Image 1 (tube, helix red, strand yellow):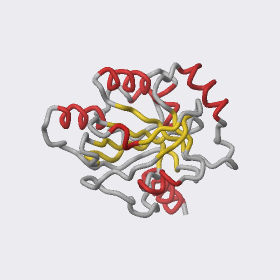
Image 2 (cartoon, rainbow, N blue to C red; image 1 turned 120 degrees about the vertical axis):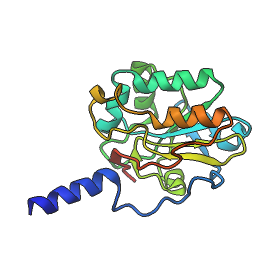
Image 3 (cartoon, one colour; image 1 turned 120 degrees about the horizontal axis):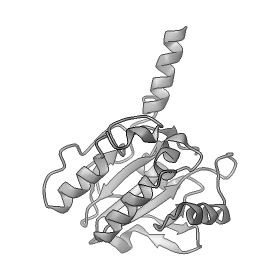
Image 4 (spheres, rainbow, N blue to C red; image 1 turned 60 degrees about the vertical axis):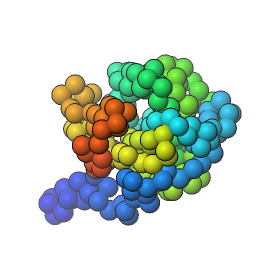
Length: 199
């Protein structure tokens, strides 16, 4: 029985029970328009010609807390934005779940955590499902041609401890550095880890 429980936990953590992603590396990124926490509409197609990072997020998830509480995710966001990359955080939690945050609550969170990138409200989960996103955090990188060049985990250590950040390989930064230099991404697909998205 203990072995079965352990296997179910591992499956839940790594998304083994989640259906295959709706899009794959090499596919055109599905376009979308969402409203951010400040009420501004954001359309992916408006950033054609730029590199874009999509980050699925849920502040109630310990794996998200791992990166936001010490300011690591904000550091990565700011660093990439300074290089001309557009970074979009997307929250697909449904309004009936305890982890749901209203736009007002989201703005307060962003202010407290010093989050500067747009935080998009995907309350009906349409965009999350279009991408096949299943975890928080789950990451996509889109190139200037609108093609997905990376999908997967943020880094190589699937834990909820911020102590592991420094010794992990950051897959997103490695992929972004390579593709922005015109090189092939060494690991374009990795397995996302984290909490399930609360569709």
